[in-house]
Image 1 (cartoon, rainbow over the protein chains, first blue to last red):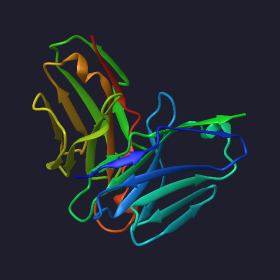
Image 2: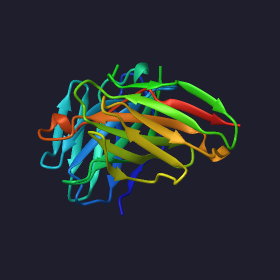
Image 3: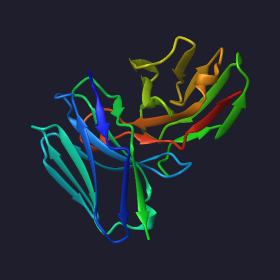
Image 4: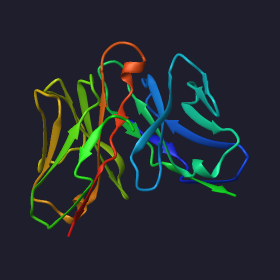
Length: 112
Length: 116
């Protein structure tokens, strides 16, 4: 079955880079997403990557995908206090499947 | 602002009661998804509607039901509520069909349900 794993906590100093890791088990996953949830708020789509890519960069965000190891990472450069939030990795299986399977989320704490 | 709206924002009710949560998708989106976020289960997919028809079902209890109306808004009905149904319920929408951008789900702010 589908399973998405993330570490629960990450603490970094302001200005450092943050790397949030995620592993998934469904080899048919074709789309992988990162969402951000701030306290008391909904889920904000940060970025996504498709399985035919191994890297995607979007301003301070870099997503790396290792399909062989089923490993996804989100790197946030120059982490700011406003980046403190819970980050969710999510996968969507292939054609015909549209629901997302989420990890439990990684709580990122940025120390000023 | 994702463009997905949900009402109400908060809901407090008692066990055994029935509630209805409402979602309006982004303009142009045909698919609506419902997710439940709880502390113990995390974020779980409940059900998906596409252009008025049920498309996929996840971990949705028999006490829960949903529908999507001709104007594409959706309602999630939760009945015979139990304490364990207390959670944040999210609605998401997507265009659903063709092209990479269209596959993205955009989430609403959620409805926080507290069952006492």
